[in-house]
Length: 176
Image (cartoon, rainbow, N blue to C red; front, top):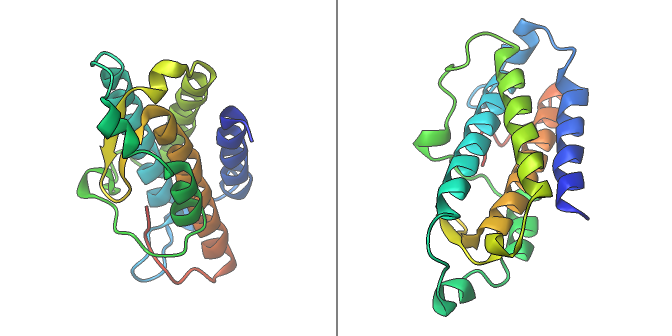
């Protein structure tokens, strides 16, 4: 699957589920779980942060061989651990929702804006994205290209969480 298509597909999946929600529906949450509004805020904050970190990393020297070796197998790990929601992972404080976007649908707008920039970035991915790395708090060192794939898988994970929540079956609460 092409990265741009994966990003666009997960965006469409989320949008199809949330675009017609009322404010009260978007802000409702099961005990211990984030509301849909909070999930979208989390996605927007996360994607904005990844864009900023990636842009900054592209101005830095390329990673060494040992550092790049640490990124081996990460795409498979992203597919297994992130997209499939096999376990609950606590989001780092810097990407937890705080209500910073205001009332619904502001978080949806922020997510769509960040996602548009992410898709634009994915369209311009080059070898330079394979030569720079950033640390992920759970997955470890990843190349910038892997970070973009993580972004798509992360939103796929949360799309499933939104679908579960709307159907009343989400019992795992907030996840990465």
